[in-house]
Length: 110
Image (cartoon, rainbow, N blue to C red; front, side, top):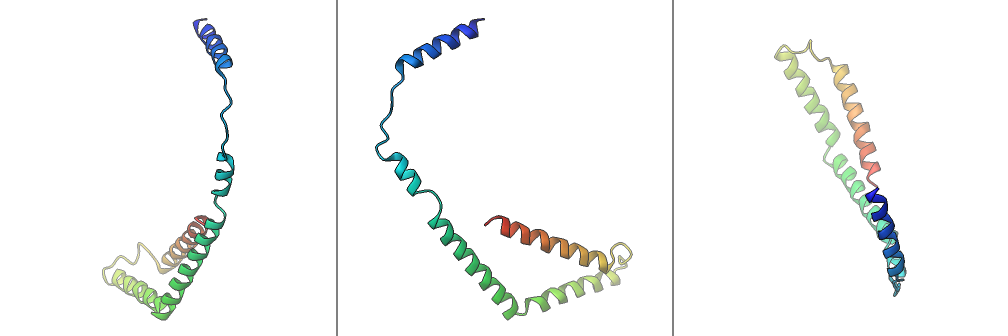
């Protein structure tokens, strides 16, 4: 019951003391600073960096490096006798899933 009386007192006090605050251009300033032009610039820079990464990846034969690393990993597993635990098909499926998830994560950040 005490809370109801307190709420009534607070509402009546705030109703009496209510004053309008002058905008003084605040709303216009907020609208002008909303993301738009800056976001497009960031998006363009991101696309340029991704393109540069792709060019460097293929220029330095990144695909061959990945394939040789996977090949060495499989050979190492076979030599150490753990080939029964993980077959190459599982590695390929895991790699494809990780690539898809990574790509989705990259594009969701934009």
